Length: 231
Image 1: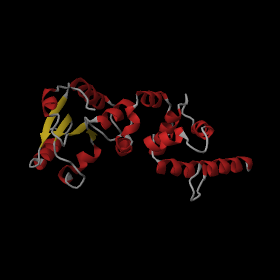
Image 2: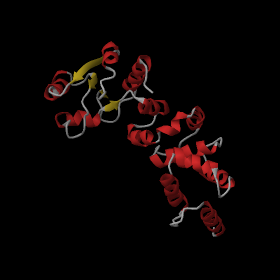
Image 3: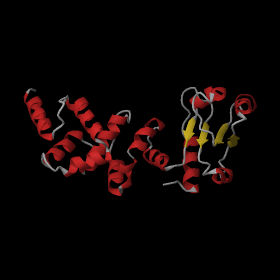
Image 4: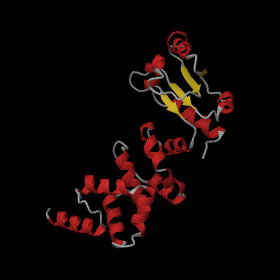
């Protein structure tokens, strides 16, 4: 589940080549490797017009000086084995908040491949099992995921992929799921397994207003029929 050297280098290059955001004058990327798994890769990587710098526990102040005084306009790759949390990075706070973060683990590979923002890291980490199947992975990859790629949109698309439908259409996925029957529903058990029972019923509430204590497909189907008739 790790990226190889070439993939790491091209993922980093892609990050450095992204257009500058408003107010950005250069790219700073923090490569956070708390397990010290990639030190040799970091050392071997060369990226045009990007400075490399290794941050260790006792050189935070020096790093801040380097960023702000010595190289205020250069693109910089900062590699560290420190688990940089916002509070521990207070010396670096400005640069750390505006910078991009990079990890080279399985979850990062998925984020990179789907071009998902780092904000979805926890959602993807929590649903890593979903991505283990080539079929589900590729189907999700083919979908258009609308909107701000918010967690709910991703989760709905994941359910569509589990239902095996050709396009990202949540209503269609739900119809397919209900057609699988109210008892021993194989599709639902896959949804529970790869997306989660809580997530499924949370989406039934937010998308369809289904808010009964008893989570049964039969009750859900009745609810959907009644709400359809009331339009």
